[in-house]
Length: 188
Image (spheres, rainbow, N blue to C red):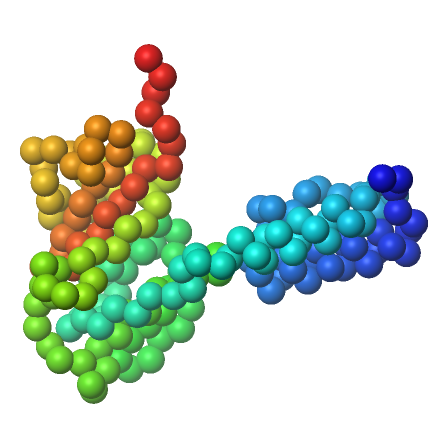
């Protein structure tokens, strides 16, 4: 494929810029492109591919909990540590965003107060990527000081099996979060 014209290059860059603006997850997929040397179809194809990869990924999760508006509770601490930022707040909740997904913590008027029972029908736990093994380990050390307790401590960090490096945390309300390390185990 030969390089595209300057006009076509500008159009391709505009498409890439729009996709990156409205689909934040696409930013990591778009190649670094300079107008004179770009391959228009490649930029558009990558942009379309990034948009398609969203299929099946988390859009948002809404958790109903007794203390959803606490700014210094375990969930606020954990979501901040994982790179989420507060997107909006209201009298009975707040939403946290990271990339193109968000988590809502809500305790509205229809909420039935009480402890989360992860062994009943419904959500058992929420699993989130926690970064590298070192970042995961640092989170676990700090988590106990921020309202979380380590589950399955006798099997940590391999409670999910020998090939999994993860931490299972539970807050005082009974919500379980699995934090998973992204990097592969060291080769032997």
